[in-house]
View 1 (tube, rainbow, N blue to C red):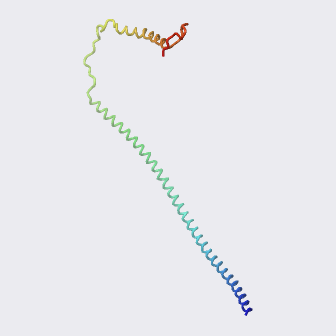
View 2: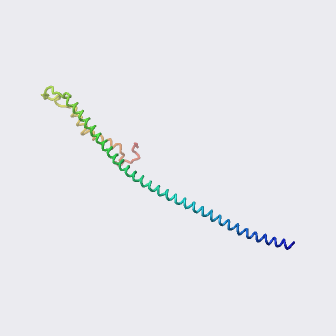
View 3: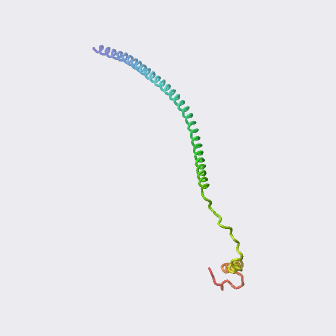
Amino acid sequence: MAREIVDDEKAVERFKGVLREQARAQLEASARGKHGEDIATLKADVESRRVTRELLRERYQSEMKSVKQFSGDTLSFRFKQEELARAEKVLDLISDRVITLQTEQGAPPRVTRMKPADPPLAPIERLPYKKLLLALLMGFCAPFGLAVFAERITLRVSDPVPSSSRPTWP
């Protein structure tokens, strides 16, 4: 019986080894199959993304062409609008001037001549004393008075008298 147990244990060990090999092979096969499926899925995903990228690139190119064409049209439209605005402004100025001229043509003259002016026979005043006196005062006396006033304000030393005996003015 001991021998049978030993033989059974050896048989169990061999069977375990065989089962290990079979399990390993099955796992490798399933892993290869799953790996192959994953690779196929990833390849299909890469191909769909490449196609999507190409479609997006074509759409981008077509949009850029339409934007360039539209922006060119918009720019020329804006130039035309500005030209129209300038022309309308000139037209408004011209029409305002025409209305002003028509109004002035129908208006009566603003100045009318009553009679020619007569020159005076004698001056109003023989000798204008007040004006002469004012001119003499402004021409001769005022500058002299200003000079004397400026000398009094500036405290210059002009004599040998000590400065301590002078009054201090601000």
